[in-house]
Length: 114
Length: 112
Image 1: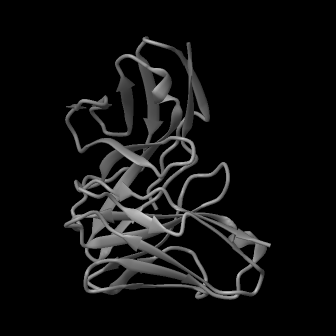
Image 2 (image 1 turned 135 degrees about the horizontal axis):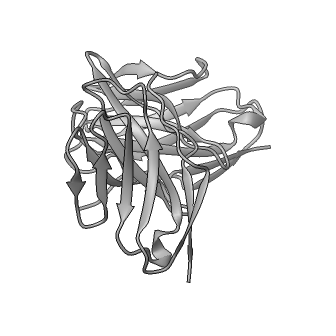
Image 3 (image 1 turned 135 degrees about the vertical axis):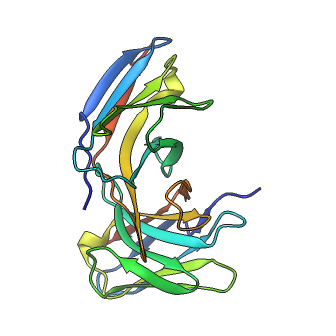
């Protein structure tokens, strides 16, 4: 049973460009969350998607947007990249909104903005 | 937002038990306590979670204080593979709200 898969694993972009990161949730999971993890820090919540809609959002600007598809996979888009957007981007999936449902994380996409 | 506090780092000798503490004094009645760990170059991995009672699984045990303002993750016999950053988080679930807030976690070193 495949877990959460993210692509690409690494990405290098130039300041001002746009990037799209992809996530396939664990089989059977319907909720996808995205996190940004700077070096040496804990993951920071970006937003969560459920039933193809953004359900809630962390403290991130509108340059960060996302999408969830009918098969529950998800994309994270970042426009007008800044140097400070360099980080590990993590996708997590879960079965439903129950607080006793563990999050399953992918190994992330390492984004470097030059 | 619900917050947790953990020591920045801890050390343990291999094959000895490890007790990783976490304070969550602002926890509310419906918040679940989750523990995750993150090995280098990997995403966080679920370890264990609980609400009020102590919990055991194949990876670890979770001891929850009676007032729920603190908890302790117990690794019964530390191995070198347990060296990781351990995150204690509160899973806050309300109507249309399911948010997980990570702190900086505890970096566990295991000494051979």
